[in-house]
Length: 330
Image (tube, rainbow, N blue to C red; front, side, top):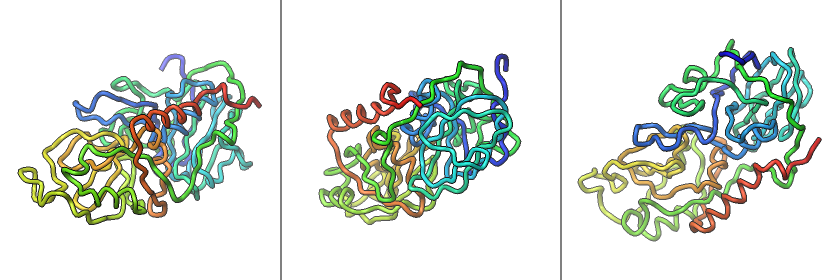
């Protein structure tokens, strides 16, 4: 591509490292496309701001770590997200949440993320240059489009970028860094399929009152939770099916808690756009980033119901973190 140059040579690609941008491809659900983009939109946007990019510029999402990159050009990078990854630059610790200069021949590496948290985000000054597909560079794994040939990175891939002026070196203050843990509180709003028509009042109390375990079989499509037998407010799904969790096919929201029988699933950015199961609650914008840091097979969740006004206020607080005027200069 004209005006581009090699940024990174992929030595080890990790589990499912992908190129993403934010907000991906919103507005295409009627055509069968969930938006893709980062699961943890907050860490992703902060990484971009730290290297002088637009918060939505194309960058890497690295679940579980185990990535090794050889640097091919002098540039600036920033890594944000999960703790305990053993992140290094040429074998020496590389700090999270700040701008770092790198040079040709340098090697960026991380081991398996121990947490808390699960995903890392690596941004580079000028962004990663991959083709724009349907108005976005984001990798949509379910559809095989965007990013690098619509897939996760592979050994031997070369990631390209465009030359930009050196950004200021910045650090996100400790007070603004997302709080990571193993036991999470995630904000939700009720429905669209909640009580009294689908769940009983006690079902909803159980939903927000119990602790949910994150299932090992969780990914960008959906975060599965441990099964729970709801009482349900109706005996069956009627014409939609025998189980009361069945509904006539309808669209799903990102962050919707899709309940298929006894198994709730938080729909991720690569999830299905529609289907025939209830969505008993929806994670609000300010809570979505937390879903991206849930460790499958280990972490737990308690859901907290919020009003629309509180959800909007929380969204403003989260977006405040992406304003570089609040960052420290190095």
